[in-house]
Image 1 (cartoon, helix red, strand yellow):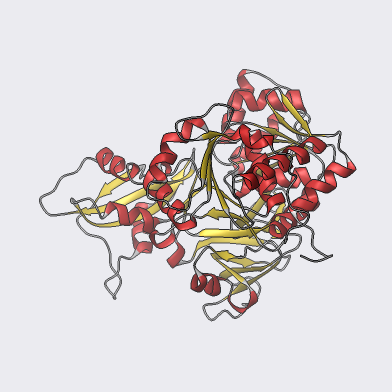
Image 2: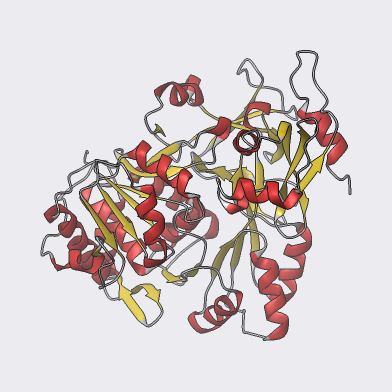
Amino acid sequence: MTVRDFSLMDMIKRNAQVFPEREALVDGSIRMTFGDYQKRCGRLCGGFHAAGARSGDRIAVIAQNSLDYILLYGAAALGEFIIVPINVRLSPKELQFILQDVSPAFIVVSPDFHEMAIQGEKGLSSVKSCYVVGRTPLGDYLPLEGLYASDAVGEEDVDAEAPYAIIYTAAVAGRAKGSVLSQANIVSLNTALSQHFKLGLQDAHACFLPLFHIAGLSVSMAVMQAGGKNVIQERFDPDQTLDLIEKERITIIYSFPPMLDQLIEKQEEKVKDLSSLRFVGGLNTPKTIEQFDRIAPDARFSVMFGQTEAMGVSICWFDEEPNSVGRPAPLARVRIVDQKDKEVETGTVGEICVKSPCVFLGYWGLEEDTAWTLRDGWHHTGDIGRMDERGFLFYAGRMPEKELIKTGGENVYPAEVEKILLEHLSVNEVCVIGVPDDRWGEAVKAVCVLVPGSSLDENELAAFVASRLAGYKKPRHVVYVDSLPKTKEGVIDREAVKREHVPTS
């Protein structure tokens, strides 16, 4: 920590100093100012200290969006703890792997996920205490509200470059990896987003994307850093979102498919005043963007390319270049390299690499993976694209070893699903691919070869996957074939499977 550091802790204290009476957070009937936010975060931080927390301790959170979730992020910043936000849609087996991998000292859950947490924490020796959001204990889980009783206010200073959050990515090669982010990473991303969206005191964000996702976290923190207001929704609900846009004069929303489509449908049923909306961002089709423009003509749509390891690689307004994923973001340099990591000529397809203060610290406990990903002083995304002469980036897919399916804003790696499918006694070979889906953007499709003499219902096989992985990872389409195409090396030819089983229109 130096005189040149600026951390999330500094942001929290700065906001409380500059505009202590401005509204920072709204959650139902609760309205909290920036001054109160700092005080409340300090008390929660002090409560963890009193419970035995030390700098670097991990706090795992399994919860839906809430005011307490934002306070936990703040308390972790003040206490130099490491927060581990966990996707609530994971299976018990996936949750257990993450908890064992990260060895949390504390677990915080919302009541809906109490049983899930109990299953996940079995055999953990690292846990000092477990808490449930609210004022009421649940089994052995103490009420989180009790931690706010402390008079302590957190650390005087923290290291902005120290680990702050560990967000687990989809399981490439069958294993989820914990992306370690620093407070400085988040502040840098806040700054980049603020510059692009020109965020300020006038802005209000409808926070319905999950706070366990980097997208939900980053947009919320960017608005907070700019002095704007975050209006928290436990989960996305189109009726509630439309009501809040009108009531709270929401200026910015970020979404994943099919959220915008649902907002369009509901707006046709119950017309709300959406004139306050200035910016909409996320992943959506041109058709959906055009339809949304009709119900919110004053809102401009932004597209972005990034990943948990390096959010904000590129960004632009959709109408600047509808087919691209943006120009290099503020605070980012982007280059395209070949298989030998040499930069290619403009217009040539290669791996997308980025250099930015937003690039993560590395993968938790995986030094070799980290070194390989961050080799030559650049973050290698594993994504393929090209740059044109105007500096626009065009996405062209994943590298073969990092094949990815993007369904409803969630990442699914085929290798992880294939591994589970092959555990079924009736499945001999399988290739998992992504296919276009009007609702979700992409859907998971499993092309399977059964063991000779076996028969298997498609729904039964999908349920088999869902019993072991998060529900969004199960195949929505299952096809049985006599054989799968192979390369000359005898490996399943994924591209040939796509040519045969991905619809062309």
